[in-house]
Structure formats: C-alpha cells, structure tokens
Image (cartoon, rainbow, N blue to C red; front, side, top):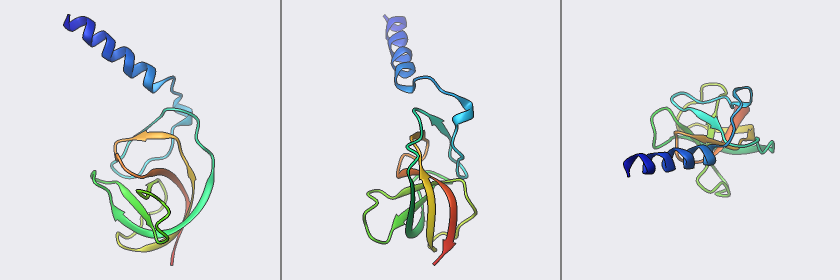
Length: 114
C-alpha cells in the first residue's frame, strides 16, 4: 500500500512540474532556487517600491509604493540592493516556482535608487 501511495505522489509531482529545460532557468536571488514550470510570461515591467526581506532566508521582496503589486515581487538576480531602500526596478515577470514562497517572480534587468 505504501509503494502505491509513493508512486502516486511521485507521479503527481512529475505531472505538476512538467518538462524542464535547464537552458530556460531564471536567474535567482541569494538563497533562492527556481525551477522552470512553464515558459516565462515575458512581460517587462517597471515598479517603484521598497526592498524588504522575504519570509525565507535570502529572499528579497519589492513592495510597490502604489499597493498594486499584491504580495510584491520576488527579485531574481540583479545588483545587491539595500534592505529598506526605495528603488525603481525594471524586470521580466517569470513563470517559475521558487523556495521563497511569496511574491511574483521578477528577473531584475535594472534597479535604480529613488
């Protein structure tokens, strides 16, 4: 019975993850890891907000000043940013699963202090 349950669990994980391609992997922030679960959304946006620590170690979240970002944006890659600093960040929305467990993944293209 345990083998059957384990096989079902592994099959479900494989189906949820889908095929992956290492060449499509998104850059990651310190302490985070990402696995591609589908093609990147590819939408490039610019957001002004405050950089905060995520709930998981090494995760950086950009909380928009306008309040339109939901749970904020998980910053993937990019230059080191000061916690509590306000930045105008341009990045590409990514469709990836991360260990950070919060924010919309955003691959940072540029970040300018405001």
